[in-house]
Image (cartoon, rainbow over all chains, first blue to last red; front, side):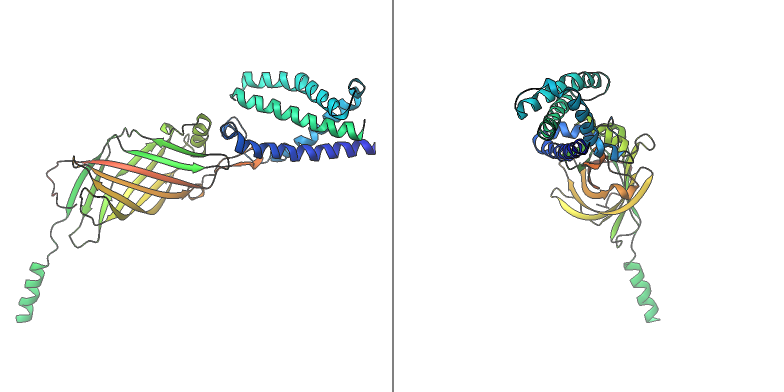
Length: 135
Length: 203
């Protein structure tokens, strides 16, 4: 149990740092897409801010559960297993949700694609942590 | 007796004269820009076609008055602002509370004495900016110029804060995206003289 908690925390902190890093990178690399966050469809900063900062830990817990349940299916070296986790998460979880998001919320396709890429990168990072700490 | 005569003569020659008034119409090609920036991008919102036919009256009590009093100004519908980025346009309208008070007014109050001529002159004046039902009086350095057609160009820039008007600059993504408190309001008034038979020796 202790190993599971440590893996969740390590992965959560890593995803938190990674999400901030990717956000700041996007300011410089994709400013026009990042400016879209000023759209009225996004909530203004306020009382719900903590939910945003908690999301890496929620993702970490969800991916950890998924890893424990299906890790036997992912074989091979650490990186390969992490890539498989990332692709499964991207295809099974992200793609349908983002498809739905794009169909009903006024956000650009490029922004939705960045969310898909961010999600895949984050799950890849979590996959590395889990494959290392709880193989 | 001699002293009284001297005083009367002095009053006669130093009489300040009649009040002087001039009326000008704000032309359609007047414009107003709001420039702001966030930690992601800078943006400019503008209204480049002024649709109201407002008039501006320059008034001077006497020729020794150090400044010209002005009545009138620019009224802009915030819903006509275009920030050239769809997302920012809608967000700026919301931030400026366009639903509650749709007008941004720049009321000209006074300007230091100047002579209308073709070369540009920097003249200090004061304006009242009305935004979101809050009025702020501010000093502005006007760039004043008379063109070949006799139209007067009055340009001014003033930095204001959202908080001056009780407005909160947008912050998104849990505060990761912040719009800066300062915005620049830049306006260019093109004014045509109105021939009303009034005394036209003011400018």
